[in-house]
Image (cartoon, rainbow, N blue to C red; front, side, top):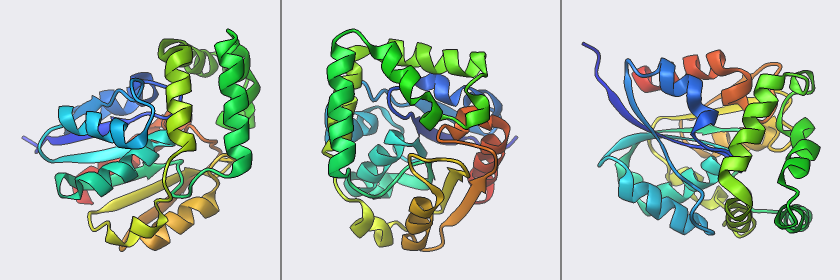
Length: 234
């Protein structure tokens, strides 16, 4: 019987465990998967502490987008507990002033009851242009955002706006690391991931073709295969 790896997956903003549905199902033969709840806190430090409190003693860790930001924080707080690291469609950089301004505008609109219109306006940035007409995919994204809700959305955006620069700590990461990016990810493009992979000793960098920002949902089979190889062989 194959060894089972404890695996903690962290979703992006404003998404939930449904982001990782395919991976949770199709890695179950080799991984005991849990998905962290990142909806209750408004700082990366608090999010990371909450994940660590409920996580196994040692575990493989994967994060997409905001989940990657929290993963970097976990590597600062408890690197000895992480056996392997996967960073998907994320960035080690802090927010730019323009990004922060856009986030504040989005929070204001969401608090006026406009969560779905805000998500709809950003859909072309979240997924590959060819997938905007994929109703099951788009409706899953909307449903996840509704479950996170306006206050969860606001907390997450506050945490993202105030996240630290993770680039100075990249060289200290010493576990097997996989860096994955959708070729057409315009939110965190390939060059941002090349920077991460170059900074982490021995990191493997893979670009998923015909894919936007939400690779785990847009190209689930490809991402699951990459995570399987990472779990089994590092």
